[in-house]
Image (cartoon, rainbow over all chains, first blue to last red; front, side, top):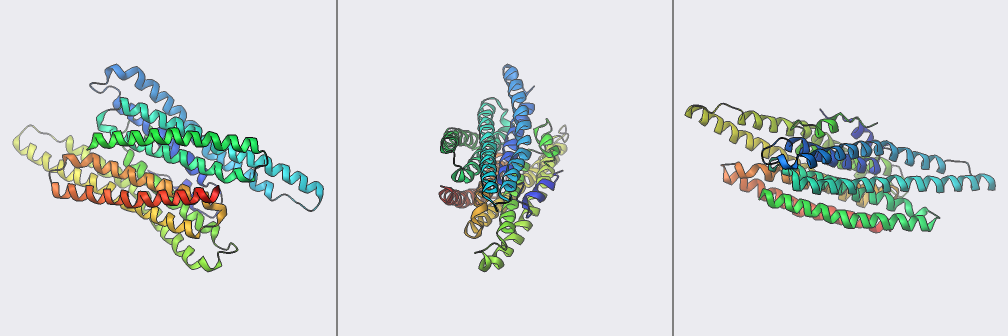
Length: 204
Length: 204
């Protein structure tokens, strides 16, 4: 049922896919579970009035899942571009200047990729919060797993922003990226814990 | 690169795979990243003395990943068995007794599956802690992602234990499962946060 080729590649000695791709995968997992919760709540007794909102949530969750799935490849591309820049020749001053600029461009791309993933993972947390209010009781543990997966994706993407930022020379861009990701972790990390707490209390 | 069939099935209206399978997938993702960190630290300058321990850690991570990957299917099987029990006829007293016993057996299996997943995810957290002490600085963010993925897997598996336990008539078994999973979340949730904090401080 589970195709393990992605996990085989993740576990291998190849540097991509790595933690950035794993973050996107966890975000996509969270979005997928929100979609499942919508499917399994639609048409259930007591959820008739929520049907329009459940359908909207389902569409948003599926669009977000598609976006996060694409980010698995985008993160690998950005990282490979950065690695290629580090491998450029550096014998002459001209080569050094060209290589230096390529590395800075690569670092910027390798920061923007997990930053975009952090934004999408934060969106997945917000969808999980809506699912917690709408989802059928029978699938409420799946809402909790969605929130946990999305929050782990967000915090993982944040680490992938943080590892690239120190080498960036554009400090304004670097600071902006760090500030944005910290705000997302603060806000949506808390939302995910609240959803998890609510789910746990419904199971007790 | 990412085969999306598992996520397609997770997002679908089919009740399996669900949150239990997602938990196992996140655990396998954490174990895969520990393996990658070992691969990318082996042979690196300054890590010569750690080579035997890195090889041991790699072997354990790969064995644990294989186990967690199998749990994706095992969780679905246990859940489907429980669903089949609920669909049994219940017209006569004899049918009701047979169905009741089948449901209790199904609930037990559907509790044991995420309990086993929680134990394996806790092991993945412990491997991430060892990777944090041994891993090369360049892949330290991947250690952090491994810890976050494994902890999300553990807390997700715990929710899947908790949702099945209330309907169990064997209260001794139910209490034992809840106590064990709470102890694992307490211990290894804290370990994962410590690993994450250490990784974050190394990136700052």
